[in-house]
Image (cartoon, rainbow, N blue to C red):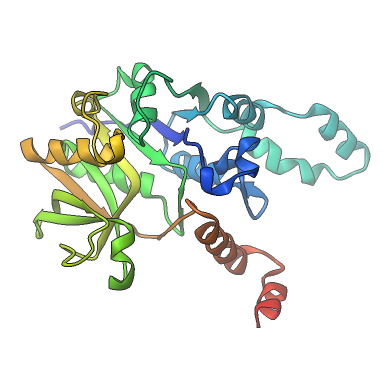
Length: 289
């Protein structure tokens, strides 16, 4: 059997990011830095590592030109200035971005309801030729591994999958903050449903987050008429409905997932990256002590 190729990914950053105001009235949330790279670049690089050939970023109207500039502007005046100073090596991080595969930036369809499913629907026309594609939320960063690659490898093993989702085991003390996975078949790791922020009796300690491989069937359920909690269009609602009619597989991450969805968790993710990767990590440890 010929392996099914997954060529495209959609990355979403189309929300209001109200917890970050006032900065997010000017800068998209996923353009906030971790080290000297924006959050969005970490998600893009995860896709690149997995061999994705085309990426669709779904942004707000204000965010669209910022992402287009970041991923396409070669800033030649800076390159020439650095060359004249013998500092060409400082331009290499820019060239690295320019060498990425094709990146398209679109605005979320304003006619769609609020919700994390709407950016995926907004990209539907760019994904119509694909049997399966990746969907990634830019709120989520994964250190130490490419979830995108794990999803693609899993699809090669389970070509009948309706969808595949990533999960991470979390401590019981925080399960009420996330979507918790209930398994249909623990041996095969197939999804029954997802319980959002369970107050007690969580079905597992597996937390679902924004890393999915989806087939075209998802658009049958990501319909503006199918709004759920708080009047929003939820991707997990569509995935749960897909699980009723076929297998949705659950893969555990090989890295560490951290959310940047609020300032406190963003700071912790940034700190984790600095302590593990930056040359000034020891200075930071000294300040913490």
